[in-house]
Image 1: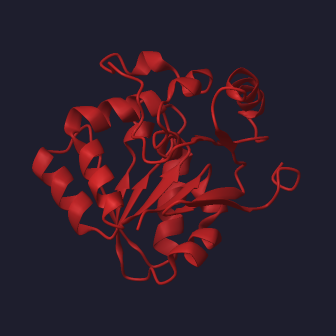
Image 2: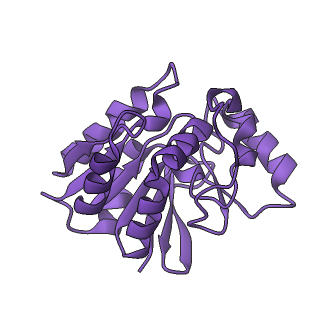
Length: 210
């Protein structure tokens, strides 16, 4: 039973997550802010954390680039949800690969654990992340040897559709890759829900999400 909740801005769709996950109060979530480490702007990390706490979730932070292998394995396996914040997608993938967290996350999702992605955390689930070059700097991931994503989904989430400051960047991604990749653009008020092979976009339309 594969269950994923992919978003652009988690705080804006927290209510949708509650509908998706149902009873969350008192449950534990592994909160991974690693993608934000190399970014100057990172307000969304605290915003996402506050939204989780407001729901009654217990947030267990895991900064993958600093954690031991044992800590990574323990937290990803024991906590009931996995949440990866936004930031730089390439740096995130680099650190997931280096630490081996990528394989553990894939195993946990396959076993039915709910995965929550926000922006970079959503993009990294795609088969390949090259399309994100227009949005994120690949130079922040000098040790990344492959742009193969986690491949948890068979499409390409494109966050922040129609939302500043990414509006033009997302339009460029759609222009450049729309005819060759199965893109799924979502705005900040939308989320992609995946349950096994069923995929649907929920939330406010693009016009309302501006």
